[in-house]
Structure formats: C-alpha cells, structure tokens
Length: 518
Image (tube, rainbow, N blue to C red; front, side):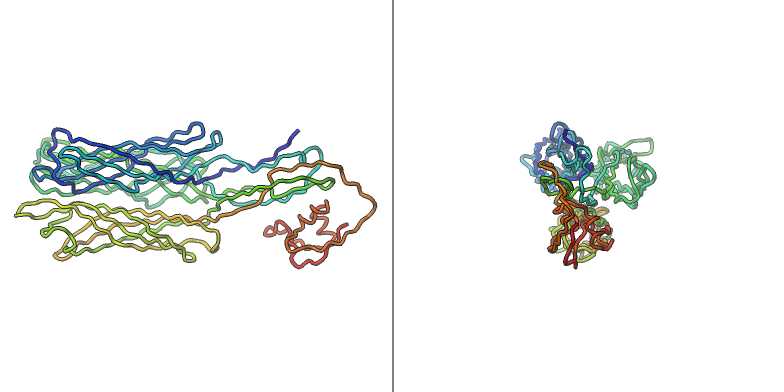
C-alpha cells in the first residue's frame, strides 16, 4: 500500500500576458449630422464575464469607444459604440479556485471611413493571476508500517491572493439645473465618471471602502457654447469578504459601468442627470505558511529518494502614494490662435521605467492629456482638440531591506484632470496614485518521493566511526549517511542547541572539525 503525505496551500500563478484585438464599424443614426472632423476619442473597457470550464478560464467584455466630433454644421456632437472582446488562459481544472484579471487597452485607432461611418480597432493586453489549490506531497514505502523516518522540514511564507465578493452600488446625481431651458434643445455631448479611494480597512467579515465618485458631463444648450459640469459625492461601502484578516494588504478594484446621461424636463426647465453602477471588489494579499519536506531517510535500511524544485513568491511590501501632477503648455504650441477655454480634459499616465533604490521605488513616465477646447473664429465659437504630454517622476517608500531576488510591480492611475488658460499658457493638473508591490523570489529543493528497498541493517557489536565534515555537511546529512538521528549525533558530540535554532533548521556544522558516530 502506498502512503502519501500532503501539505495543501493556495498557489498564485501569474500567467503570461495575453494579447488580443477588438474591432468595430459604426454607422451614424439618421438624426445625427455628417462627421466633418473628429476632435476627441477614447477607448475604455467594461469587463462583463468570467467563465471557468475544463482547463481554461475565459474572460470577456466590451470596449467602449467615445467619439466627439464637429458635424457638417460645425456643431459639437458625439457618439458612443462598442465592440466585444474575449480571451482565455489555461488553468489546472478541478484545482482552480479563483482568478484576478487586469485587462487594459494598450493602443487603439479610430478613423473616419465616410461622412457617416467610423471604424475603430483596439489592441488589448490581459494579465491574469490564478489562485489554485495545490499541495506539496511525498509518497512511497518509506512511510509504511512502524518505520518512522527522520525528516528535514522547513516552513516558508508563500504569497496568497484572495478576492472578496463583488458588490454593485447605483448612483444617480443631478449635475446641472437649467431653468427655462427646453429639454429637446439640451444635449449631453460627453459624460464620464471616476472613483478615488481614501481608505480601505478590514472590519469583521467585511472591508469598509471610503472614497469619492466624480461625475462629469459636457452640456450644450441650443446654439450656446458647450461647457462642462461636474459633481463629487462621497461614498462609504462595506464589502463582504470571507476570510479577511487584519494583516492582509487590501487593494480595492473599482469600476464604473452602465454610465448614462439624461435630460429630464419639468415645468420650470430641465435638469441633467448622470447615473452609473460602481462595482466594488477587494483583493486581499498576505503570506501563508507552507511546510516543505526537504529530505527524509530510515535509520534501519537505505531509502531511494527523488527531488524536485519548488519555486514561490513571498510578499515583502506593498504601498501607495498620491500626489498632484502639474503641466504647463505655451499657447504657441497649440494649433489655435483664438483659444478661448478648455471644455474638458482627460489624463492617462504611461510608465516608462521602474527603478528600485534601497527602500524606495522610483517611477518615471509621462501623463498624456487629451480633451477639447473652444476657440473664437470670426467672432463665432468653434472647437479644437487638445493633445499634449508631460513627464512625471514619483517615488514610493517601501519596507524592504533585502536587495536580492526581488520582483517589483508598479501601477499608476490618474484622476481629476482639469485645465485653465491665461494670456500666454495652458495649465493642466491631475492627481496621480502610484501603487507598488514587492515580492521576493524563493526556490527550494524538496523531496518528491521516497522508497525503501533492500535488507535491514544489522548491528554487529559496538562501532565508532570518526567523520570529518565537509563545508556542505549538516547534522541531517551526516545522520542520513550513517543511518542515525540528528539529535543523537548532536548529543554524542556535545553540539550546542543553537544548531537546532529556528534560523538554522538544517543544522549547519560551521566550525566543527570532527564527529564521532556511535
């Protein structure tokens, strides 16, 4: 009969990035005028599904394209359309427990293929981390019967990630009140919503997330110039999280879906209302102890062992920092002589390099600003696109001393972009939040199987062997060689108990020149 011993743990595996594309062709509805010039484009993601079946996990969703343009009558107008995407990664089938996906648009293009037809194409990158139930096991006849093996074990800390339940909260806010306006003449040209998190804390079986939701809309009333309105509301939500612990590093993942805008009429005018659903999910990360069996043997007969490599990551530190980013642009660098005011602005950060300097991670890149501004043309208001980039450099302090075998992962997000003008310059600002995670790579040679064959050893009288240990020897390896126990070798040679201390689990024999084996 074969006996197996197992140590179970939750293994987190980062899959190789998956690259895919999504494409859409869109024809304008009859009630909109022809497209004369595209001023602003945006591509964002709305994940919609995750399905695990067989040995694959499939992720799907839609790419949302926003296009703001000048129509044939030089009016500012916009359309929104979508295209589907999906991709899959391999998993371990019945051992699959959960997955964390980060899908992003790495690049996109929107082009006009006719006065009433727009073609869009985006390139997507999917980064997936799988949580799978695994075990470190040893099997073989060495564990049969009454033979108790001498074992060399070691406990290591392995990074583990868990997901909370996903909670949805609906928000609807009045962004503007237009007294006396006719609802049919009021148009919402562009709308957006973004979340920022102020704090995240474990409370019992929940995680309390506090932050702000910023909703924005660009409104045009008849022939009057378009302008932007916004509203910021606070939120405090408790998200159920089974197994959350105080020592976990908690990262909130928030996304706004089903965003829409409405112009509601009443007897005094109309109001502009923007609504959307915020999805809340929390990623909890910590280190879990995993007991590894490095080696074993029987004292009364030889064992035949085989070994394998066990690699893992240990979470060392995680931190985040927020700061403002400011940019200046000379009016001469903008393709407009009569720039009037900035209607709206968005900011997208791009990381160029990440460098670790002791207990600090330096992130260098640029913020790409994009939006629309109004301009005066022959005493009439028209609109132009704004596109420019500004470099940034930020640092995040981390609790880390070891300089070897480290992996650094950095992400950066922008929010609250805005801009103003004076006679000479355009001033832009946004808030940047940088998130850094540092892990240490570990590798151990562990026992994969052990078999005991052959005859038992017979003791023939008393025997004393003098052994001169090599630099690589340990108490365990010497005891295994002579089929005795580590404790007996230590006691017979008056070796200090410090050899068995927690920081020396294998019993290093540093400084010991001779051993007597009885």
